[in-house]
Length: 289
Image: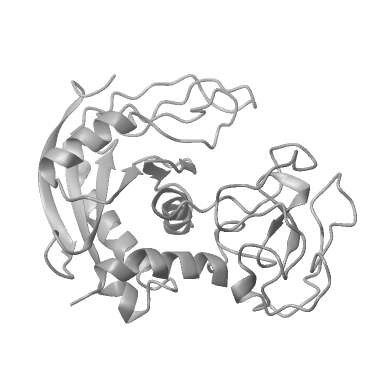
């Protein structure tokens, strides 16, 4: 399974903000689309681009004018992605002959983790558009899944697949951490995370996003009352409050996120102010006339 199972087609510009030499270039690539399904890929890619620019801060002119969006048609022999039997009980054991060899259970233990041959993806896109900045791999499969990394991977399965794509873009393009608090040790083992939106510091006046804090002096703003589970809430402050909320980066305790909710915690939520600030800052050099 791999590059012999398909062929690379045409690169098409979806959104033109300027010369690719001066703008931030996002390329949406087809994976698991047969020749007869590439028309649907075009619809899906345009739909994702439209949805992206409805998501703050991508709605802001200073961000919109920084971004070019392209789609790259890549034909696969078969539809979908591999679904090996997974340690968490998922998977059917089926395989699909696709160009980038996308598969669920990419880590061997988590069914929803969908990824593939990122090195081949980057090499393929580099030939089509050497000036690319980020690749999003759109996998044609009805099962919901995704993963971040140098390449963002996601399927078009599930009603919220566009939100999943934007979440994975948060990881891949802006180096944002997951702000949800399950899947790891109950308590963060220590050390300051590298990502800009999670911290081991409970004090809002000292945390790395302190310039955006508008919470009171409580340290943390919200402590999880039970480190054996996710804090059930409700949110103790207004929705727009930035502070330190315990439970982030896969741990219930000792890791903190900037807001009660965020797209990096829940794909249905908007980006929190800290994440939005990172996105705006990343785009600033590409927004110049």
